[in-house]
Image (cartoon, rainbow, N blue to C red; front, side, top):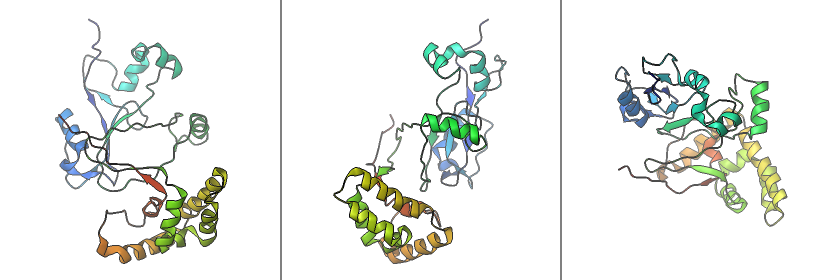
Amino acid sequence: MAAPRVFPLSCVVQQYAWGKMGSSSEVAQLLASSDPLAQISEDKPYAELWMGTHPRGDAKILDNRITQKTLGQWIAENQDCLGSKVKDTFKGNLPFLFKVLSVETALSIQAHPNKELAEKLHLRAPQHYPDANHKPEMAIALTSFQGLCGFRPVEEIVTFLKKVPEFQFLVGDDAATQLKQSMGRDSQAAASALQSCFSHLMKSEKKVVVEQLNLLVKRISQQGGHGCMPGWVQCFGLRFSTPLSKWNTKRG
């Protein structure tokens, strides 16, 4: 009898601090629906559900008829399931990781390497870069969601520097002036100035970021707004980023 080609998986859950808590998390709900033995802790976050073969989250196979214990092991012995093009291009490996995210608070800012740099980083520090793939991403919102992608126009960032003194303090007067002077010039000058500003912000000492963030929170506390992780430099970093419109796909 041929081995079944469709089988249930027990997927790995990542409990990052920004995830929704307990059974309010879609991740926790999916985990419970797929694994009757799963125990959901209401005081713990459930941020991501991973479906794939990632070294830190290889999905387990829940079918006693199959000798392999994980999806990665099964694909390694059944590489034709990937199709010839994917099999040859990615050397018999599943080239993507399917995730479900349930977000309660702001996530960290990420910068993904291209394929060439990803391979170099993996060779240099595999403990930090467990695979050699770049990470282009596609996202589909199951509920209303807001995100940030790329950089705002320079004019908008300069406006924020004028209106948010705590932001200006962390960027620094020299870098801020360089950015202001880049307006109306060629794109290379603007890119260089933007890099200088963003680098100054992200390399700020944590204690200084905390001080300025506390000042900012105190100043606008009466205005309301979204929460932010205490001491996160990303609370200022969002001033550089372009907000995306709400994505909303209603479930049937």
